[in-house]
Length: 366
Ligand SMILES: Nc1ncnc2c1ncn2[C@@H]1O[C@H](COP(=O)(O)OP(=O)(O)OP(=O)(O)O)[C@@H](O)[C@H]1O
Image (cartoon, rainbow, N blue to C red):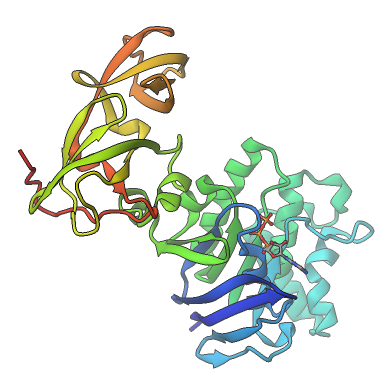
Protein backbone atom coordinates (compact mmCIF):
# COMPACT_ATOMS: atom_id res chain seq x y z
CA UNK A 1 0.00 0.00 0.00
CA UNK A 2 1.40 3.40 -0.95
CA UNK A 3 -1.01 5.95 0.38
CA UNK A 4 0.43 9.42 0.84
CA UNK A 5 -0.89 11.70 3.57
CA UNK A 6 0.12 15.29 4.09
CA UNK A 7 -0.88 16.56 7.53
CA UNK A 8 -0.92 20.34 8.04
CA UNK A 9 2.22 21.06 6.01
CA UNK A 10 3.46 24.65 6.29
CA UNK A 11 6.68 26.09 4.92
CA UNK A 12 8.40 29.43 5.39
CA UNK A 13 11.56 30.70 3.78
CA UNK A 14 12.78 33.29 6.32
CA UNK A 15 9.77 35.49 6.96
CA UNK A 16 7.97 34.48 3.74
CA UNK A 17 5.32 31.82 4.31
CA UNK A 18 4.91 29.93 1.02
CA UNK A 19 2.78 26.94 2.11
CA UNK A 20 -0.17 27.31 4.50
CA UNK A 21 -1.41 24.32 6.47
CA UNK A 22 -1.80 21.85 3.59
CA UNK A 23 -3.56 18.55 4.33
CA UNK A 24 -4.20 15.98 1.60
CA UNK A 25 -5.01 12.27 1.63
CA UNK A 26 -3.78 10.62 -1.59
CA UNK A 27 -4.98 7.07 -2.24
CA UNK A 28 -2.89 4.04 -3.15
CA UNK A 29 -2.34 3.88 -6.96
CA UNK A 30 -3.83 7.32 -7.46
CA UNK A 31 -2.46 9.81 -10.03
CA UNK A 32 -2.66 13.22 -8.38
CA UNK A 33 -1.62 16.43 -10.14
CA UNK A 34 -0.61 19.64 -8.35
CA UNK A 35 -1.47 22.55 -10.60
CA UNK A 36 -1.36 26.30 -10.17
CA UNK A 37 0.33 29.46 -11.41
CA UNK A 38 4.04 30.16 -11.09
CA UNK A 39 5.12 30.67 -7.48
CA UNK A 40 2.05 29.02 -5.88
CA UNK A 41 4.25 26.46 -4.10
CA UNK A 42 3.81 23.30 -6.21
CA UNK A 43 7.49 22.43 -6.47
CA UNK A 44 8.17 23.25 -2.83
CA UNK A 45 5.39 20.90 -1.74
CA UNK A 46 6.73 18.12 -4.00
CA UNK A 47 10.27 18.66 -2.69
CA UNK A 48 8.98 18.41 0.88
CA UNK A 49 7.35 15.06 0.04
CA UNK A 50 10.65 13.94 -1.51
CA UNK A 51 12.61 15.06 1.55
CA UNK A 52 14.69 17.54 -0.50
CA UNK A 53 13.19 20.38 1.51
CA UNK A 54 12.16 20.38 5.17
CA UNK A 55 8.65 21.47 6.16
CA UNK A 56 8.45 24.16 8.82
CA UNK A 57 5.63 22.15 10.41
CA UNK A 58 3.45 19.18 9.58
CA UNK A 59 3.92 15.51 8.73
CA UNK A 60 4.46 13.35 5.63
CA UNK A 61 3.04 9.84 5.95
CA UNK A 62 3.85 7.28 3.21
CA UNK A 63 2.12 3.91 3.39
CA UNK A 64 1.02 4.69 6.94
CA UNK A 65 4.59 5.41 8.10
CA UNK A 66 5.69 8.86 9.27
CA UNK A 67 8.69 9.72 7.07
CA UNK A 68 8.87 13.42 8.01
CA UNK A 69 12.32 13.01 9.48
CA UNK A 70 13.55 10.33 7.06
CA UNK A 71 16.33 10.85 4.53
CA UNK A 72 15.10 11.04 0.87
CA UNK A 73 16.51 7.61 -0.02
CA UNK A 74 14.68 6.02 2.93
CA UNK A 75 11.25 7.34 1.89
CA UNK A 76 10.56 4.88 -0.93
CA UNK A 77 9.99 7.69 -3.41
CA UNK A 78 11.53 8.45 -6.76
CA UNK A 79 11.56 11.84 -8.45
CA UNK A 80 11.73 12.77 -12.14
CA UNK A 81 12.80 16.33 -12.90
CA UNK A 82 12.15 18.75 -15.74
CA UNK A 83 15.84 18.62 -16.67
CA UNK A 84 16.38 14.96 -17.37
CA UNK A 85 19.70 15.01 -15.47
CA UNK A 86 21.19 12.16 -17.51
CA UNK A 87 24.91 11.39 -17.57
CA UNK A 88 25.97 12.22 -21.16
CA UNK A 89 29.01 9.90 -21.18
CA UNK A 90 27.00 6.86 -20.01
CA UNK A 91 24.81 4.67 -22.24
CA UNK A 92 21.04 4.51 -21.81
CA UNK A 93 21.53 1.17 -20.04
CA UNK A 94 24.04 2.65 -17.59
CA UNK A 95 21.89 5.71 -16.96
CA UNK A 96 18.89 3.55 -16.08
CA UNK A 97 21.05 1.18 -14.01
CA UNK A 98 22.76 4.01 -12.12
CA UNK A 99 20.67 3.98 -8.91
CA UNK A 100 20.99 0.18 -8.77
CA UNK A 101 24.80 0.36 -9.03
CA UNK A 102 24.75 2.85 -6.15
CA UNK A 103 22.67 0.30 -4.20
CA UNK A 104 25.25 -2.37 -5.22
CA UNK A 105 22.51 -4.62 -6.55
CA UNK A 106 23.53 -8.01 -7.91
CA UNK A 107 24.23 -7.96 -11.68
CA UNK A 108 21.50 -10.43 -12.75
CA UNK A 109 18.84 -8.61 -10.73
CA UNK A 110 20.02 -5.25 -12.08
CA UNK A 111 19.99 -6.55 -15.65
CA UNK A 112 16.44 -7.87 -15.27
CA UNK A 113 15.14 -4.62 -13.80
CA UNK A 114 16.78 -2.45 -16.50
CA UNK A 115 15.38 -4.62 -19.29
CA UNK A 116 11.90 -4.63 -17.75
CA UNK A 117 11.93 -0.83 -17.48
CA UNK A 118 13.27 -0.49 -21.05
CA UNK A 119 10.50 -2.74 -22.31
CA UNK A 120 7.76 -0.74 -20.56
CA UNK A 121 9.21 2.48 -21.96
CA UNK A 122 10.01 1.09 -25.43
CA UNK A 123 13.70 1.77 -25.07
CA UNK A 124 15.00 -1.78 -25.57
CA UNK A 125 16.67 -0.97 -28.91
CA UNK A 126 18.20 2.22 -27.51
CA UNK A 127 20.02 0.73 -24.51
CA UNK A 128 23.50 1.03 -26.04
CA UNK A 129 23.06 4.62 -27.27
CA UNK A 130 24.24 7.74 -25.44
CA UNK A 131 21.71 10.43 -24.35
CA UNK A 132 23.04 12.79 -27.07
CA UNK A 133 21.75 10.35 -29.72
CA UNK A 134 18.17 10.46 -28.39
CA UNK A 135 15.21 12.80 -28.92
CA UNK A 136 13.90 14.91 -26.02
CA UNK A 137 11.01 12.51 -25.43
CA UNK A 138 13.33 9.48 -25.42
CA UNK A 139 15.65 11.21 -22.93
CA UNK A 140 12.74 11.89 -20.63
CA UNK A 141 11.77 8.22 -20.89
CA UNK A 142 15.31 7.26 -19.82
CA UNK A 143 14.93 9.54 -16.79
CA UNK A 144 11.61 7.83 -15.99
CA UNK A 145 13.28 4.41 -16.49
CA UNK A 146 15.87 5.35 -13.91
CA UNK A 147 13.09 6.01 -11.43
CA UNK A 148 11.11 2.84 -12.30
CA UNK A 149 14.02 0.44 -11.58
CA UNK A 150 14.06 1.50 -7.95
CA UNK A 151 10.53 0.13 -7.45
CA UNK A 152 9.46 3.20 -5.48
CA UNK A 153 6.25 3.34 -3.46
CA UNK A 154 5.48 6.79 -4.83
CA UNK A 155 6.63 8.45 -8.06
CA UNK A 156 7.09 12.22 -8.01
CA UNK A 157 7.24 14.20 -11.26
CA UNK A 158 8.28 17.87 -11.37
CA UNK A 159 7.12 19.37 -14.70
CA UNK A 160 8.72 16.48 -16.62
CA UNK A 161 7.34 17.49 -20.02
CA UNK A 162 7.94 21.22 -20.05
CA UNK A 163 11.16 20.96 -22.11
CA UNK A 164 9.36 19.12 -24.93
CA UNK A 165 7.59 20.64 -27.93
CA UNK A 166 3.78 20.64 -28.01
CA UNK A 167 3.34 17.53 -30.18
CA UNK A 168 5.77 15.45 -28.15
CA UNK A 169 4.17 16.65 -24.90
CA UNK A 170 0.85 15.31 -26.18
CA UNK A 171 2.41 11.90 -26.97
CA UNK A 172 4.21 11.74 -23.62
CA UNK A 173 0.98 12.58 -21.75
CA UNK A 174 -0.58 9.47 -23.22
CA UNK A 175 2.54 7.40 -22.46
CA UNK A 176 2.63 8.56 -18.84
CA UNK A 177 -1.05 7.70 -18.37
CA UNK A 178 -0.39 4.23 -19.79
CA UNK A 179 2.68 3.88 -17.60
CA UNK A 180 0.60 4.74 -14.55
CA UNK A 181 -1.88 1.98 -15.45
CA UNK A 182 0.79 -0.63 -16.15
CA UNK A 183 2.83 0.12 -12.99
CA UNK A 184 -0.24 0.47 -10.76
CA UNK A 185 1.72 3.01 -8.74
CA UNK A 186 0.92 6.12 -6.71
CA UNK A 187 2.04 9.18 -8.67
CA UNK A 188 2.21 12.87 -7.82
CA UNK A 189 2.80 15.17 -10.75
CA UNK A 190 3.49 18.91 -10.75
CA UNK A 191 2.59 21.12 -13.70
CA UNK A 192 1.35 24.60 -14.50
CA UNK A 193 -0.38 23.18 -17.60
CA UNK A 194 -4.09 22.63 -16.95
CA UNK A 195 -4.44 20.38 -20.03
CA UNK A 196 -1.87 17.97 -18.53
CA UNK A 197 -3.73 18.12 -15.24
CA UNK A 198 -7.14 17.49 -16.80
CA UNK A 199 -6.01 14.64 -19.06
CA UNK A 200 -3.79 12.65 -16.69
CA UNK A 201 -5.09 13.14 -13.16
CA UNK A 202 -7.43 10.96 -11.15
CA UNK A 203 -7.65 14.00 -8.88
CA UNK A 204 -6.23 17.51 -9.15
CA UNK A 205 -5.00 19.79 -6.36
CA UNK A 206 -5.36 23.44 -7.40
CA UNK A 207 -2.90 25.57 -5.44
CA UNK A 208 -3.08 29.33 -5.13
CA UNK A 209 -0.68 31.39 -3.04
CA UNK A 210 0.44 28.33 -1.05
CA UNK A 211 -3.12 27.23 -0.20
CA UNK A 212 -5.29 24.43 -1.56
CA UNK A 213 -8.16 26.05 -3.48
CA UNK A 214 -9.81 22.74 -4.35
CA UNK A 215 -8.97 19.01 -4.48
CA UNK A 216 -11.18 16.94 -6.76
CA UNK A 217 -11.56 14.98 -9.97
CA UNK A 218 -11.08 16.90 -13.24
CA UNK A 219 -14.83 16.85 -13.90
CA UNK A 220 -15.66 18.05 -10.36
CA UNK A 221 -13.36 21.02 -10.90
CA UNK A 222 -14.79 21.71 -14.35
CA UNK A 223 -18.47 21.42 -13.42
CA UNK A 224 -18.39 22.48 -9.77
CA UNK A 225 -15.53 24.93 -9.17
CA UNK A 226 -15.70 26.22 -5.59
CA UNK A 227 -13.96 29.51 -6.37
CA UNK A 228 -13.52 31.97 -9.20
CA UNK A 229 -9.81 31.09 -9.20
CA UNK A 230 -10.48 27.39 -9.91
CA UNK A 231 -13.18 28.27 -12.43
CA UNK A 232 -10.85 30.46 -14.44
CA UNK A 233 -7.86 28.12 -14.14
CA UNK A 234 -9.60 24.95 -15.32
CA UNK A 235 -11.11 24.82 -18.82
CA UNK A 236 -9.88 26.02 -22.18
CA UNK A 237 -10.67 28.66 -23.42
CA UNK A 238 -11.04 30.23 -19.97
CA UNK A 239 -14.43 30.78 -18.36
CA UNK A 240 -15.96 34.20 -19.05
CA UNK A 241 -16.63 36.31 -15.95
CA UNK A 242 -19.33 38.93 -16.37
CA UNK A 243 -20.02 41.62 -13.74
CA UNK A 244 -23.63 41.58 -12.59
CA UNK A 245 -25.90 43.10 -9.95
CA UNK A 246 -28.34 41.12 -7.80
CA UNK A 247 -31.89 42.36 -8.47
CA UNK A 248 -33.78 39.95 -6.22
CA UNK A 249 -33.30 36.83 -4.12
CA UNK A 250 -35.77 34.23 -2.95
CA UNK A 251 -36.01 30.59 -2.01
CA UNK A 252 -35.62 29.41 -5.61
CA UNK A 253 -32.50 31.42 -6.51
CA UNK A 254 -31.38 34.89 -7.54
CA UNK A 255 -32.23 37.27 -10.34
CA UNK A 256 -29.31 39.26 -11.76
CA UNK A 257 -28.71 41.94 -14.34
CA UNK A 258 -25.52 41.38 -16.31
CA UNK A 259 -23.44 44.27 -17.58
CA UNK A 260 -25.10 45.27 -20.87
CA UNK A 261 -28.59 44.88 -19.39
CA UNK A 262 -29.44 41.19 -19.90
CA UNK A 263 -31.39 39.75 -16.95
CA UNK A 264 -31.26 36.13 -15.82
CA UNK A 265 -32.85 34.01 -13.10
CA UNK A 266 -30.20 31.64 -11.72
CA UNK A 267 -30.85 28.59 -9.52
CA UNK A 268 -28.20 29.19 -6.82
CA UNK A 269 -28.26 29.47 -3.02
CA UNK A 270 -28.88 33.11 -2.14
CA UNK A 271 -27.78 32.91 1.52
CA UNK A 272 -24.61 34.99 1.10
CA UNK A 273 -25.91 37.76 -1.20
CA UNK A 274 -28.48 40.54 -0.99
CA UNK A 275 -30.32 42.75 -3.42
CA UNK A 276 -27.92 45.32 -4.85
CA UNK A 277 -24.77 43.20 -4.32
CA UNK A 278 -22.18 42.91 -7.08
CA UNK A 279 -21.47 39.37 -8.25
CA UNK A 280 -19.78 37.79 -11.27
CA UNK A 281 -21.53 35.32 -13.53
CA UNK A 282 -19.20 32.67 -14.98
CA UNK A 283 -20.08 31.24 -18.39
CA UNK A 284 -17.87 28.72 -20.17
CA UNK A 285 -17.25 29.56 -23.86
CA UNK A 286 -18.61 26.15 -24.89
CA UNK A 287 -21.86 26.62 -22.93
CA UNK A 288 -23.42 29.22 -25.24
CA UNK A 289 -25.45 28.88 -28.43
CA UNK A 290 -26.53 31.33 -31.10
CA UNK A 291 -29.97 32.54 -30.02
CA UNK A 292 -32.28 35.49 -30.41
CA UNK A 293 -32.89 36.58 -26.90
CA UNK A 294 -29.75 36.71 -24.79
CA UNK A 295 -26.31 38.23 -24.50
CA UNK A 296 -25.28 40.69 -27.19
CA UNK A 297 -21.61 40.32 -28.09
CA UNK A 298 -19.57 42.44 -30.52
CA UNK A 299 -17.30 39.99 -32.33
CA UNK A 300 -13.77 41.39 -32.73
CA UNK A 301 -11.89 38.26 -33.80
CA UNK A 302 -13.20 35.01 -35.26
CA UNK A 303 -11.08 31.85 -35.45
CA UNK A 304 -12.51 29.08 -37.58
CA UNK A 305 -10.87 25.79 -36.61
CA UNK A 306 -13.15 23.56 -38.68
CA UNK A 307 -14.81 21.66 -35.86
CA UNK A 308 -15.45 24.83 -33.85
CA UNK A 309 -15.61 28.58 -34.39
CA UNK A 310 -14.04 30.58 -31.55
CA UNK A 311 -14.98 34.23 -31.20
CA UNK A 312 -13.33 36.89 -29.08
CA UNK A 313 -15.42 39.98 -28.43
CA UNK A 314 -16.97 42.20 -25.77
CA UNK A 315 -20.24 42.74 -23.93
CA UNK A 316 -21.28 46.37 -23.54
CA UNK A 317 -18.06 47.43 -25.28
CA UNK A 318 -15.83 46.49 -22.36
CA UNK A 319 -16.17 43.07 -20.72
CA UNK A 320 -14.34 40.46 -22.76
CA UNK A 321 -16.30 37.44 -23.87
CA UNK A 322 -15.11 34.33 -25.68
CA UNK A 323 -17.54 31.89 -27.30
CA UNK A 324 -16.81 28.46 -28.74
CA UNK A 325 -19.52 27.50 -31.22
CA UNK A 326 -19.78 24.23 -33.12
CA UNK A 327 -18.79 24.02 -36.80
CA UNK A 328 -18.85 26.96 -39.23
CA UNK A 329 -21.07 29.23 -37.13
CA UNK A 330 -23.04 31.86 -39.07
CA UNK A 331 -21.23 34.89 -37.64
CA UNK A 332 -18.89 37.58 -38.95
CA UNK A 333 -16.02 39.56 -37.51
CA UNK A 334 -17.04 43.14 -36.70
CA UNK A 335 -20.74 42.29 -36.38
CA UNK A 336 -22.84 41.75 -33.25
CA UNK A 337 -24.15 38.30 -32.35
CA UNK A 338 -26.79 37.18 -29.87
CA UNK A 339 -26.02 34.23 -27.61
CA UNK A 340 -28.21 32.25 -25.28
CA UNK A 341 -27.02 30.33 -22.22
CA UNK A 342 -28.91 27.92 -19.99
CA UNK A 343 -29.23 29.19 -16.37
CA UNK A 344 -28.05 25.84 -14.99
CA UNK A 345 -24.75 26.27 -16.92
CA UNK A 346 -24.00 29.59 -15.20
CA UNK A 347 -21.75 29.86 -12.14
CA UNK A 348 -22.15 32.79 -9.76
CA UNK A 349 -19.28 34.14 -7.63
CA UNK A 350 -19.68 36.55 -4.73
CA UNK A 351 -17.40 39.54 -4.14
CA UNK A 352 -14.84 37.34 -2.31
CA UNK A 353 -14.63 34.93 -5.27
CA UNK A 354 -16.54 32.05 -3.62
CA UNK A 355 -19.16 30.24 -5.68
CA UNK A 356 -22.85 30.41 -4.74
CA UNK A 357 -23.82 26.78 -4.42
CA UNK A 358 -26.15 25.54 -7.15
CA UNK A 359 -29.58 24.29 -6.23
CA UNK A 360 -30.22 20.74 -7.31
CA UNK A 361 -33.82 21.50 -8.38
CA UNK A 362 -33.95 23.79 -11.41
CA UNK A 363 -36.75 26.00 -9.98
CA UNK A 364 -36.25 29.66 -10.89
CA UNK A 365 -37.43 33.00 -9.58
CA UNK A 366 -40.05 34.61 -11.81
N1 LIG B 1 14.96 28.21 -1.56
C1 LIG B 1 14.08 29.21 -1.52
N2 LIG B 1 14.32 30.33 -0.81
C2 LIG B 1 13.41 31.33 -0.74
N3 LIG B 1 12.22 31.32 -1.37
C3 LIG B 1 11.92 30.23 -2.10
C4 LIG B 1 12.83 29.14 -2.23
N4 LIG B 1 12.24 28.19 -3.01
C5 LIG B 1 11.05 28.70 -3.37
N5 LIG B 1 10.84 29.92 -2.82
C6 LIG B 1 9.63 30.75 -2.97
O1 LIG B 1 8.52 29.95 -2.63
C7 LIG B 1 7.42 30.24 -3.48
C8 LIG B 1 6.93 28.98 -4.13
O2 LIG B 1 7.92 28.50 -5.04
P1 LIG B 1 7.74 27.16 -5.87
O3 LIG B 1 8.99 26.97 -6.68
O4 LIG B 1 7.32 26.07 -4.99
O5 LIG B 1 6.53 27.57 -6.83
P2 LIG B 1 5.96 26.81 -8.09
O6 LIG B 1 4.48 26.83 -7.94
O7 LIG B 1 6.61 25.48 -8.25
O8 LIG B 1 6.38 27.79 -9.26
P3 LIG B 1 6.90 27.48 -10.76
O9 LIG B 1 5.73 26.93 -11.52
O10 LIG B 1 7.33 28.83 -11.26
O11 LIG B 1 8.03 26.50 -10.63
C9 LIG B 1 7.90 31.31 -4.45
O12 LIG B 1 7.48 32.56 -4.00
C10 LIG B 1 9.39 31.17 -4.39
O13 LIG B 1 10.01 32.42 -4.68
